[in-house]
Length: 119
Image 1 (cartoon, helix red, strand yellow):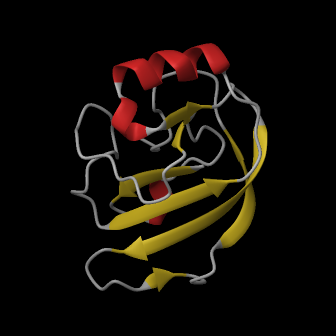
Image 2 (cartoon, helix red, strand yellow):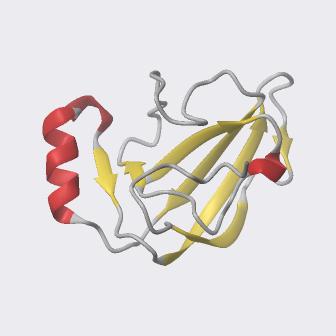
C-alpha cells in the first residue's frame, strides 16, 4: 500500500500523524486538490509504502464505492506501522537520502483529516 504526498521541504512531514488513506496501486498519484500536500505543486514527492497494517474495512468499502479508480485502503487510526519512505526532489529527479528508501515507524494519526503537514 502506498501513500504519496507533496511538500515544499521534507521537514514539513509529520510522521507521527501521517494519515490513513493509502492505495493498493503503487503507481497511483492523487490528481485533485482538497487536502494539503495531495497536489503536485510542491517540490518534494514523498512515497510511503506499508506492507502490513490494520485496515478499517468499513471506511475502505465506502471510499472504494466513491472513488473506485483510487483503489483506496483506509488504515485504522492511531497505529504505528513499519514503512519504507522515499523522498524525490521533483525539480532534479534525485532522491533525498537513499534511493532504496528509509525504513521507519510512522503513525497513522487520530483523525480522518490530513494533518500530516506541519504548520
